[in-house]
Amino acid sequence: MIILLFIVHMLIALALIGVVLLQKSEGGALGMGGGGMSGFMTGRSTANLLTRTTAFLAVAFFGNGLASITWSLVSTLAPARLLGLTGGVFNFIGNLSAITTPIVIGFLASGDSFAPAITYIAVLALLGALSYVLLVGKVERIEL
Image (cartoon, rainbow, N blue to C red; front, top):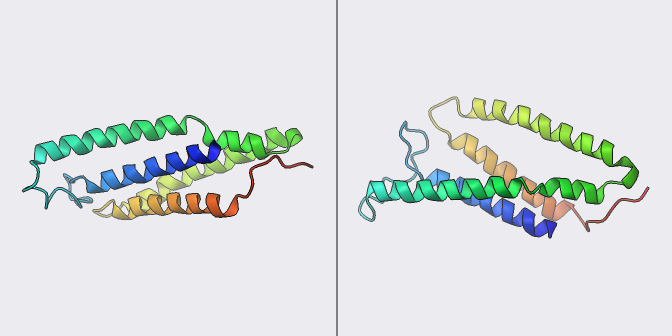
């Protein structure tokens, strides 16, 4: 069940990144979408569809994230007597990434485009998914 929730979470994240990249930007940021579709749809209907899709995927992403997928994995794998220490280390690394990621994104988006920053996040998501699939073996409690 944990793996299924994780896969759903990653698919929602990748879909959200794709939908954001398709949107036409106002200030010349990404501007990857919208230009060639003027004959197919009106600009207004494209914006409404993409805006609604983005909102739906954002709610789904954060709702799925609130399910505490990773905490259930930590509590499943950690030795019973070291659960508090394992949780503390887990929170420390999560908070460390919460500090460094905005700094890196701010550096990458300092120009006139957000494409490097979104690419960075997409690569991190892909690396996280691959490391989970390739490095995490059978999910069972570690016995000391």
